[in-house]
Amino acid sequence: ELLIKKIHDMKNVKILWENDAIEKKIKEMAKNISTKWENEPVVNLIPVITGGMIFATKLIMDLEKFTPEKWVVNPVIASAYEYSYNPNKPEVVRVSDYENKFKEGSPSIIIDDLLDTGITLSIVKNMIRAITNYNVEVAVLVDKVAKRKIDIEPEYHGFTIKNDYWLVGYGMDDKGLLRGMDSIGYIEQIKML
Image 1 (cartoon, rainbow, N blue to C red):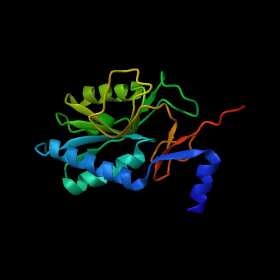
Image 2: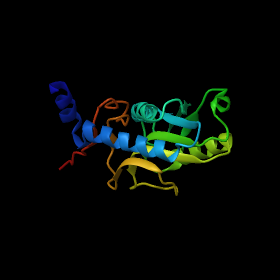
Image 3: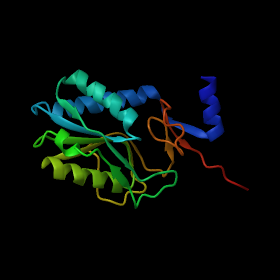
């Protein structure tokens, strides 16, 4: 715990949501998704890597507990961030036989850590809809509305934030760091005098 406190102090991280609150929201989302799609034999889940991997793992495990043997998982790598923020040029990477892994005619849910500008998730959503020819929804841990550029809303979200904070933890990072924190916080900007 002392090491985590040191990291938080070094990076000026201010915690917004602790692990217990996050896990409670994820379980609620899983219950809502399971209930909505209870009559579907199969649902495609598309975790967006790297940011969405921690949230997606927890959500998929909870979904499997609520409704076993229903979820087909097909991750995609997508990012608008490298080590510099460029939301206008997101990159989407997938394996060569990606389309073959989907259950066509089944609903799909894209799972990501954060909905920010909406550009990247809109690209992924259109790509998945073209593959499955069916309903595509979005589940995010944090719906960050401050920079939204595309008309896209998540069907499922854990938290909403209106501030334009740089979020870290639970998959969100700062130049590759702090992604593995079990809480969500933001980097406090130090004002120079």
